[in-house]
Length: 173
Image 1 (tube, rainbow, N blue to C red):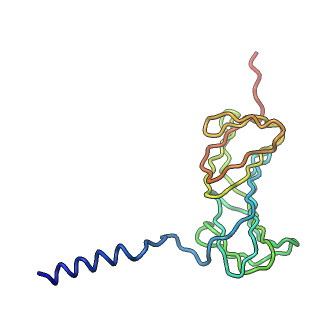
Image 2 (cartoon, one colour):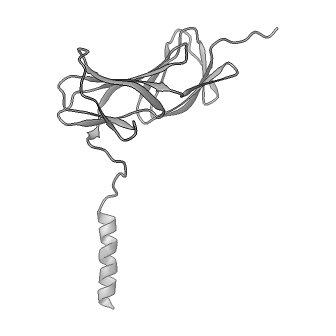
Image 3 (cartoon, rainbow, N blue to C red):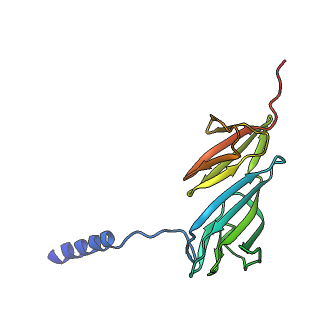
């Protein structure tokens, strides 16, 4: 009887002492990113640029959700670096470097046009800058209007938003 109680207490202690692990598969540690820029063109193309600080160990850069094309990694001088994609375009592995690394790619099929209203659902756990096409002075973030004025875009930290804007507002006569 005492033996069963001792075994139950031992099992309980093992589960409480051992920390839970992250179920996401990664080959390196998380990258320390200087900046993340999402640029939306007037033709509906979305370009993403991550600037990653130098590191002595391999690091992972999580990519945005969507269909990814034209992915490249360069250093500050513009020299191409080796590219290692983790999973199904979920992340890229950046090998040790003493310079900033720049990861650039295009997101296809994420910007949706419906009745002259462009919509883009963005979700990323870090601080990002979203640059809006020229000529747009008002955007809607989760249905709340934001007047841009002379600003080029918006910043979002721990971002999970539905960004919407009208490229040309139809005139009602």
